[in-house]
Image 1 (cartoon, helix red, strand yellow):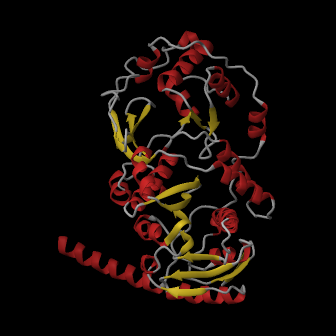
Image 2 (cartoon, rainbow, N blue to C red):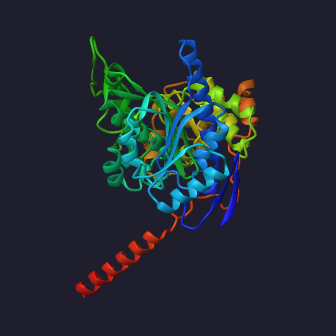
Image 3 (cartoon, helix red, strand yellow):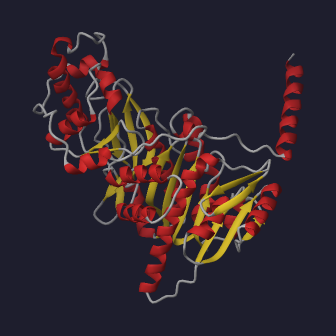
Length: 478
């Protein structure tokens, strides 16, 4: 048994109940986001002349209850009803003790997570889903549990599946085919948002992302669930397939729908049968959610709230949020180091790359997912032109000589640039200097990674049963 102190919560951790100290960033961010959402809700109701009676919060998989405790003590708005639920009897007993020791007035229940959400449809201002592993099986219940305009907070730690290691598994869980390209972490976010929105659409609901993060070993999204048949119809125009070249870094988005004369309708395919840059074949991936990942005004309010709080992970929170605020609202991103590796050229500095992009009349921002990933409003051919000019500028004597003759890179470089040579030496703008001088990707503490699932007595019995069953099967095969 150990005492764990986090924010305003103090909990005793017992064997068999899961809590990952590395997720303190996740919980800190959740407190900030829910605080901003609660203030917005209160202001909206008061503007409409309606009383704000307090928040209704449900945590269906509460484990130790630390997140619910922090919501109760740190949101700084009245809590009308708080339920912390878990299927494990050991967890339920621990939550009760932790609620009592932290003076939390909330309900503690023992039930299946989906059951308690289906049992209380459309009544919660905030529902927080943070399972161990994939969240896929809880999505349908989650989108129905939140009231219209409510906040659904979702974590999924099956990033290896969402990032393309198991396409068949990802498809049966999320009805989307993932990518292993360098933009896979943003792709993972968009797969999760696609499934959230698709599940919501069945009930004439839509999800509106307020903040979407790929951090460390998990993805975390905060979405409003809004009741609107019209907006649900528009979802077809926010869903896209991604055609990823198998031989070069090029990728192309194809939106599934478009706005018609009187309604949203199917789109016309105007793509290529092979990659126009290198002639490679395409992998078909997605669908993904191709709308905005964040609401920038909301992110501004979260940053402002952060500065008013004393959070343990302040530097990391600030770094991620500053990056998010600066991100362009376009799908996916480009990896600078991967592009230089593909062309076998000297790696451009951040300053040189930003200069080249800006001098070409384009916008550029760093992705919050990684310091070498950039969002650019650019056509693939124009981006490749930048690298054609770059290699001619700094290594004209080995423009293609350091590449295999039959490589995709040679086929790309052998095409003449269609755009003028960019300026690689422009000075950074004042805004860029401010962004690049901030701490955007602070290192994690030691031993920060994911922890093994808590071992309970029931789990031990199941493991032994599986072991005996496997021994019987092995004996039969022999």
